[in-house]
Amino acid sequence: MPSPELSQPEMNNLPFIIAEITFHPREGEINPTVSGARYEGYMPHLVVQSPEVRQAAVENNEITDEHLGVRIVDSPFKYRLGESAWFTLVLLYEVNYNALIPEATFTVREGPIIVGYGKVLARGNSVEEAEKAVISN
Image (cartoon, rainbow, N blue to C red; front, side, top):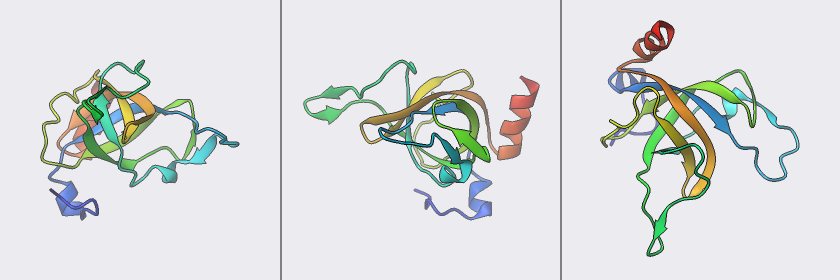
Protein backbone atom coordinates (compact mmCIF):
# COMPACT_ATOMS: atom_id res chain seq x y z
CA MET A 1 0.00 0.00 0.00
CA PRO A 2 1.23 3.53 -0.70
CA SER A 3 2.33 5.61 2.24
CA PRO A 4 -0.17 8.23 3.49
CA GLU A 5 2.65 10.78 3.01
CA LEU A 6 2.73 10.70 -0.77
CA SER A 7 5.10 12.59 -3.03
CA GLN A 8 3.65 14.46 -6.00
CA PRO A 9 4.83 11.78 -8.51
CA GLU A 10 3.19 9.06 -6.39
CA MET A 11 -0.06 11.03 -6.22
CA ASN A 12 -0.03 11.51 -9.99
CA ASN A 13 -0.47 7.73 -10.37
CA LEU A 14 -3.58 7.46 -8.19
CA PRO A 15 -7.27 8.07 -8.95
CA PHE A 16 -9.06 11.05 -7.45
CA ILE A 17 -12.66 11.95 -6.79
CA ILE A 18 -14.31 15.30 -6.24
CA ALA A 19 -17.19 14.95 -3.81
CA GLU A 20 -19.77 17.15 -2.20
CA ILE A 21 -19.50 16.36 1.53
CA THR A 22 -21.34 17.49 4.64
CA PHE A 23 -19.52 16.94 7.94
CA HIS A 24 -21.66 16.75 11.07
CA PRO A 25 -20.86 19.20 13.87
CA ARG A 26 -19.37 17.33 16.81
CA GLU A 27 -21.18 17.35 20.12
CA GLY A 28 -20.35 20.47 22.07
CA GLU A 29 -18.70 22.22 19.11
CA ILE A 30 -19.26 25.94 19.69
CA ASN A 31 -18.03 27.43 16.41
CA PRO A 32 -19.25 25.43 13.42
CA THR A 33 -17.11 27.48 10.98
CA VAL A 34 -13.66 25.95 10.60
CA SER A 35 -10.65 26.40 8.37
CA GLY A 36 -10.78 24.02 5.43
CA ALA A 37 -7.14 23.22 6.19
CA ARG A 38 -8.48 21.21 9.13
CA TYR A 39 -9.52 18.56 6.59
CA GLU A 40 -6.47 18.53 4.28
CA GLY A 41 -4.55 15.36 5.01
CA TYR A 42 -7.54 13.90 6.88
CA MET A 43 -7.85 10.17 6.14
CA PRO A 44 -11.38 8.90 6.81
CA HIS A 45 -13.12 5.92 5.25
CA LEU A 46 -16.08 6.10 2.89
CA VAL A 47 -18.90 3.56 2.88
CA VAL A 48 -20.96 3.60 -0.31
CA GLN A 49 -24.58 3.71 0.86
CA SER A 50 -27.50 6.05 1.40
CA PRO A 51 -26.51 9.26 3.18
CA GLU A 52 -29.52 8.67 5.44
CA VAL A 53 -27.68 5.86 7.28
CA ARG A 54 -26.64 6.98 10.76
CA GLN A 55 -24.95 3.90 12.25
CA ALA A 56 -22.59 1.15 11.16
CA ALA A 57 -23.85 -2.31 10.21
CA VAL A 58 -22.62 -4.74 12.88
CA GLU A 59 -22.86 -8.53 12.89
CA ASN A 60 -21.31 -10.73 15.61
CA ASN A 61 -19.65 -7.61 17.09
CA GLU A 62 -17.88 -6.85 13.79
CA ILE A 63 -18.50 -3.97 11.39
CA THR A 64 -19.67 -5.45 8.10
CA ASP A 65 -19.69 -2.28 5.96
CA GLU A 66 -16.97 -2.09 3.30
CA HIS A 67 -14.71 0.81 4.31
CA LEU A 68 -12.77 2.53 1.51
CA GLY A 69 -9.77 4.53 2.73
CA VAL A 70 -9.27 7.99 1.23
CA ARG A 71 -7.25 11.12 1.93
CA ILE A 72 -8.56 14.66 1.52
CA VAL A 73 -6.05 16.66 -0.51
CA ASP A 74 -8.05 19.83 -1.15
CA SER A 75 -10.85 21.52 0.76
CA PRO A 76 -12.57 24.91 0.89
CA PHE A 77 -10.72 27.76 2.61
CA LYS A 78 -13.56 28.20 5.11
CA TYR A 79 -16.09 25.52 5.86
CA ARG A 80 -19.23 25.57 8.00
CA LEU A 81 -19.98 22.22 9.68
CA GLY A 82 -23.41 20.92 8.73
CA GLU A 83 -23.28 22.49 5.25
CA SER A 84 -22.11 20.85 2.03
CA ALA A 85 -18.88 21.77 0.23
CA TRP A 86 -16.63 20.32 -2.44
CA PHE A 87 -13.59 18.29 -1.40
CA THR A 88 -10.92 16.53 -3.50
CA LEU A 89 -9.95 13.05 -2.31
CA VAL A 90 -7.23 10.65 -3.43
CA LEU A 91 -8.06 6.92 -3.50
CA LEU A 92 -4.98 5.66 -1.66
CA TYR A 93 -4.98 1.92 -1.45
CA GLU A 94 -4.96 -1.14 -3.67
CA VAL A 95 -8.59 -2.02 -3.02
CA ASN A 96 -11.63 -1.99 -5.28
CA TYR A 97 -12.92 1.58 -5.49
CA ASN A 98 -15.26 0.80 -8.42
CA ALA A 99 -18.33 1.80 -6.39
CA LEU A 100 -17.05 5.39 -6.07
CA ILE A 101 -18.45 6.63 -9.37
CA PRO A 102 -20.23 9.91 -10.13
CA GLU A 103 -23.60 10.14 -8.34
CA ALA A 104 -22.65 7.43 -5.80
CA THR A 105 -23.61 8.42 -2.26
CA PHE A 106 -21.65 7.54 0.84
CA THR A 107 -21.16 8.08 4.54
CA VAL A 108 -17.85 9.33 5.96
CA ARG A 109 -16.50 7.20 8.81
CA GLU A 110 -14.03 7.29 11.64
CA GLY A 111 -14.16 3.61 12.52
CA PRO A 112 -17.82 2.84 13.25
CA ILE A 113 -18.71 6.52 13.79
CA ILE A 114 -20.44 8.34 10.94
CA VAL A 115 -19.02 11.87 10.82
CA GLY A 116 -20.55 13.00 7.53
CA TYR A 117 -22.06 12.03 4.21
CA GLY A 118 -21.66 12.95 0.58
CA LYS A 119 -21.94 12.31 -3.12
CA VAL A 120 -19.28 11.72 -5.76
CA LEU A 121 -19.37 14.49 -8.37
CA ALA A 122 -16.53 13.30 -10.59
CA ARG A 123 -13.69 10.80 -10.80
CA GLY A 124 -10.42 10.91 -12.70
CA ASN A 125 -6.92 9.50 -12.90
CA SER A 126 -5.55 12.90 -11.83
CA VAL A 127 -6.87 15.96 -10.03
CA GLU A 128 -7.02 17.80 -13.35
CA GLU A 129 -9.02 15.01 -14.99
CA ALA A 130 -11.50 14.94 -12.09
CA GLU A 131 -11.85 18.75 -12.22
CA LYS A 132 -12.51 18.65 -15.98
CA ALA A 133 -15.18 15.99 -15.40
CA VAL A 134 -16.94 18.23 -12.86
CA ILE A 135 -16.87 21.19 -15.25
CA SER A 136 -18.24 19.13 -18.15
CA ASN A 137 -21.17 17.84 -16.07
